[in-house]
Length: 361
Image (tube, rainbow, N blue to C red; front, side, top):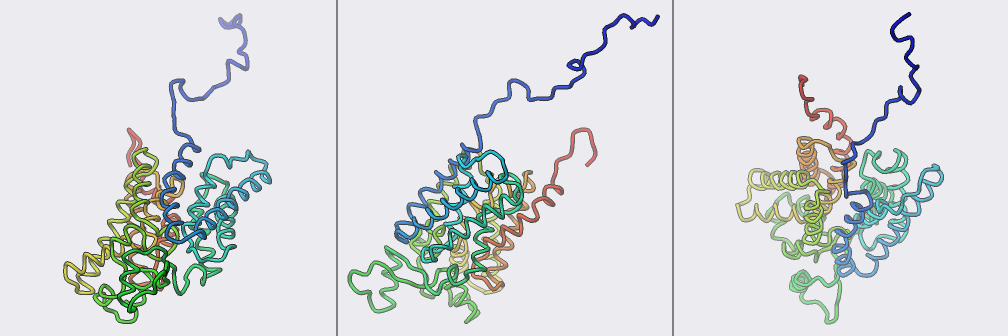
């Protein structure tokens, strides 16, 4: 008889292969921890938006967050999957949606934008981690097309404008005593209008624009997320320190916008060094660039996975932004630039995937 005739047959348990993580793998980070930290990083800019634009800023944020959370909970129940609104991801989307809107938009605009962001941009693709585009920017793009007068008003309110109010008072012959707010074009819209009319960047820089310090602090008209580059930067630095935001994207994004604006100012517009510096500074501080570069383009789900891909992604966002601002029809281009580069992320990941050890590229 064969030598193995007396050996017992293998049991099903002995034939099974158990695959799992090694027992010493530990991680303190989690989705709720990261998402609620992002919310905390946005709180200073949120408080500032209420200071500059009034109670309507908080109303928009509340409506957008409530809609985002309710939409996510309802859809997850309909899909018969666990309801995960407690992880904070819907809250982040709601806050960012509101930050993309001006304070004087009608009350239903943040509701529609938040619904589109969660229902279409997020859950139509499978939920958190499966979406192709940044949900908040998809919601903003939808209402920008559906309600253009709400997203591009003829005048923007500026409350407690400080030096900007004083400058306007000088131009108009003085403001009446007790005035707390003025309305006017947002800096980027004003910039675009003058550039289109005169074709001379020097005319733009000598126009009735707010000071750079006012733009850095947030004493300007615009969307809620254009309030304060300073406070947005402080929140982003905290997330970078924790390792939840990759610094390559904002650095590449901002550097590309600065380089493009500088090249245009020096060679196309033929400005001197001093005016070129101001031209670059206005493009860095104006519009939604700070919010987009620090909190939108750095989204973990819709940005590349590799270090080289992050640089390419940030460069692409910056190049599209400055090209649309200077030569396109919109005064602002951050939203569509990031969405276009989100579309290219799978291709970027494929191009920049690292070589496996022991294999040719």
